[in-house]
Amino acid sequence: MAQQPANQTGGPTFATPATGEANKQVSAVPALEGVIVGKAETAHDKQFESLEIYWWKAVKQPQAVLVLADEKARTEVFLNEDWVSFLRAHQWSLLVLGVKGAGTSPALEPAVAALEQRLFTWVDSKTSPPVSGSDDDEEDELEKKKGPVPLLFHASGSAAFWMESIMLRKPSRFAAWLSVDPIKFPEIPRVKDFKTAPGGFLPLVAPIPSPLTTATLPAVKKYYEQLDHFEEMRSRNGESRVSFIPWTTGSSTELRDSFARMYLETAAYGEDDEHLWLNVQTLLEHPLTATNKPDPTRFGWLPSQTLLGAVKALRPAVLPKLPPAVGRRFFKTREFASCDLRWIRNVPKPKAVLVIAANALPAHIRYMPDWIDYAKKHEWAVLLMGLKEDRIRSVEGAAKNFEARLYREIDTLAGPELKNLPLLTYAQGTPAMWLQTLMIRQPSRYQAWISLGASRFPSVTAAIKVPPGLLISQNPGQYGQSLLHFEDLRGADPYNPVCFLPLADIKPTGTILEASYRAFFDAAISANKETVHWLHLHSLTLPPNSITSRPDPKHYAWFPSSDILGIWKALRQDTIPVPLPIIAKRS
Image (spheres, rainbow, N blue to C red):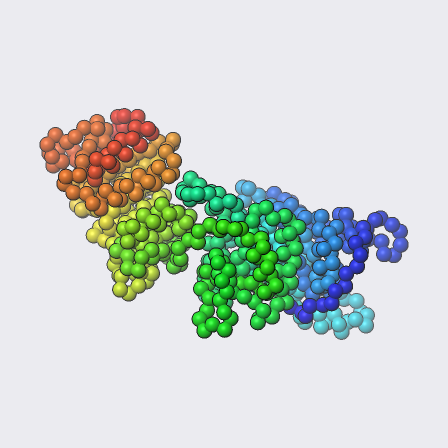
């Protein structure tokens, strides 16, 4: 950006309708004297519930345009002497944006593109040098050669999503930015060494519940999501100058605005030798003279030492526990739109990998001691997976490609000395079907599995011995297909250790269910002849002599211990009446 101009502020007087040359224009909203605010006419767009744009051009040729964005347009800033003086001092124009996306908008990408076009068109139309034919033509021509004026933004809440989305699409157009307590995040472009414009996140931290469990996680979930997004942005390119500055929830809007002005000023004009790299948890500084670069996921950028006092003063006394470091991998194939992976090593040399998969990346597991400490106790690494299908032309071909790529990524994350680690899988939804497919293709690599909420399953067409597993239907709509898959697996070998748990719409809490799943894994990997039980699914009776004494082993469920049998009965009796309905066999 251009060199910082000298201060050009005046006194705080209010604009009032009057006659005379200086007051021919009337401000669209109340404003200080000399601040003539225009309002853009925005046509109704089904992608936005509301969209307002207000504009003040502080000087003839502004050095930059500051976008102040929130869900509701903050027009009160035109009456705020601190903002007006700041903008005049820097020769920046101000665009106040009020934006709220439509709750039923089916696709965000078109809405972001539409808002970007509207915003840039409006800014460029107001900042392009006029065709005057005067003595200023030469000066105007020089301004044109500079290109479009840079933008900065200070956005809060849901509006931060829209502004960050635009910035990620055109990072070179932005000089600096600050997002205050964003509630959702755009996908960062998957471009090699992608680098954002300099900027930062200012999360507002709520009091931390103790202990942190699945039930209490919502209180700090937003903070962890903001931290994960910061880490994702920094990990794409270690040179990206991105801050993460937690503040207490009690800080006022005025205080945040004051910090935003200081931050944007130093981020836009600061010198390279003035910035800092600080550990986001401890604020320990990484020396600029160090030969090694700061850890991209643990260190955030601060544009100036002068901001450090404010950062410390308004920082919460206690921050949520820093989650374990993760390795990040992403791939897609012709059949899968995306497979997002997070690797948590847990121990130096893990003995196995616990794969936790869902349609959307279950990133919250990283912050849950329930799962992370459990895996660490067993010396397992944890792999979090988010998987989205594209067009499946051939299940066999898709499974083959997915298997090869997934196993290669796991081996890469584990390292050359830990290839072909055994797997345990806990999968929900679409990933449950695909991990079941991989397990059937190569059962020897799997120690145990839990599959729930799948709407379809792979075919079992040959005799096969599978590892211990628990198949769960979450509602009556999934029950039929789940039961048939259970019968297929049990029918493939009379001793296949498979259990089937149908749940009704009314379920126990997630904390209780997940504790039950961990108990199943514990029992499954330590089961022996003395602990195993078999029980008829529908009559709840024991087999007559042994499981091989038919009539039909498909109806007998396997239980690795009496404790799991008790848990199964309790969950089932609480949710499904006994006996279970028997589905007609397939023709």
